[in-house]
Length: 375
Image 1: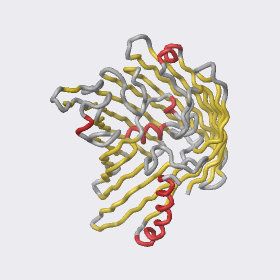
Image 2: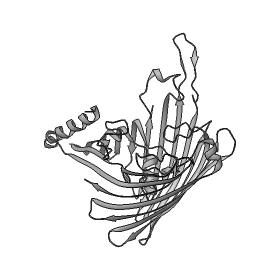
Image 3: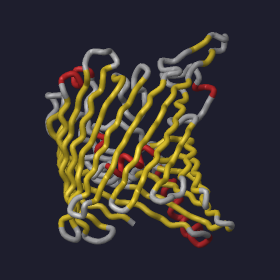
């Protein structure tokens, strides 16, 4: 039996005694569906049919707890693991790779430390009608960061609809280490994100600023200076977005710019062949009866190649429907289609129709249908 499966079994077995001692709950989602993909960027590859885990929402298992420690303070934690329900294994590196953090909150707001979602992702994925899940997710095209290791996040209290969050990490994609100096292309990736927003009634409007900085200069055993590819280079991202619920439809809009000193070296985007990008989204959510909703979006991105030879462009439109059988069980279906221009295909920087932990594998058209249950 694999170590990750042993870990999961031990945690479930131990949860009984933990639950008896403090306010700890188990949560998660089990999602399975059928997915068809076609029109690969490589014309030699045919269509594909799969029964996948996480076809709409990545399946996961988590533990969360909160303790009132007096004087208006509350301590809390979340440990969340990804699960591939098609095999029963733990993807994404195993362990609690989705989230793992501890927090302290009070009248001042909340401070959380550990592996967490970035403020920018929390905001932009809320603007996306598909919530950054299903084959219609905005991040098939829209470049963004998802989670950082070693993250310190501050969430302000809301006052008259205004609030903000800010996050910082000395190395968002690994452990801070002197051994990273002069090692690889980026070494430690220092990360900063600030996200103010206003939420009142049917309106949500917000902005996001983010900076990634590579720190990888070091010396070898002989004292020689070693400088990796992106040492001292920066990536800056700016996003503005809003949603407005008219009752008959909830409208969404998002616009973002990414500027890189030399290339977009972010491990989350995989966009090292491009330099600067402009991207936007328009979307809508329409309620259909008491239990159904129709989802639609169009996402567009234009990225300047780092070589300076043109812009890699991609556009995606998506249409989906969800029907709630109960508060926790939902049937869904989604169709999405991506178009990449010739410059992007020639440069090997293309968008494809992925979903959750399931990569797009170069496919530019996909449909999915399935069921998910949350607990």
